[in-house]
Length: 220
Image 1: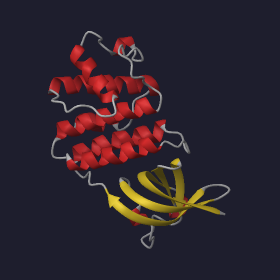
Image 2: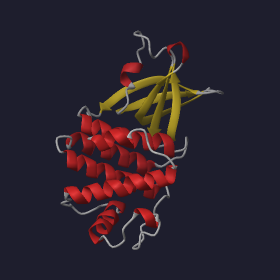
Image 3: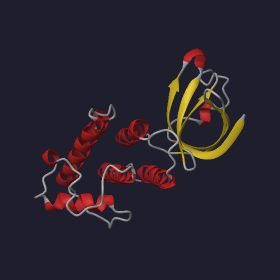
Image 4: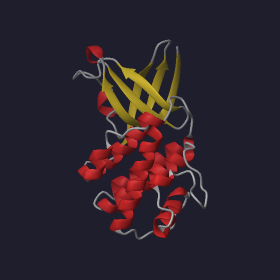
């Protein structure tokens, strides 16, 4: 049996039969990994407390013939996203990872951006509008890295029916979201709503369905 040691961000947990849990992790070296912890749902589990979603951890994972098992974990940081509006934004991003990132596809830059996004969300959670913009920017950065968009002046990757090309302010904001280091912005409530609407429509276009977290994120 081989082992890997890596840092990871915990995206989600799923309870399995007999109190076992499946944890979905995102790592810089190995991409998305699904790994089990036996009896994690029991009160005696020594690992489960460090593996809550939105935790940054160092894990040792045993690779088996059927599935991976978490053999050890060290909690490095737990992102504070307790505010309901922030929780809704982080939930949307985590669901995007779960549904759009294939297991084992390595993308260190995406890991770094996810970490920075969660850190910024934690620091800005008193400012709901800023958190919403951070989420939109991160989603477009994710889409760009994943190959779903391109940094083109005419933004012709967007479905015509979902994007008003005559809206110069929205076009400029979207281009800004697609760059690595956007300049500081003052975004009006109306413009932010337009960006959110465009982003949600494009996600529906790609996935051909709504994300479950979408309604929660919109409500806040």
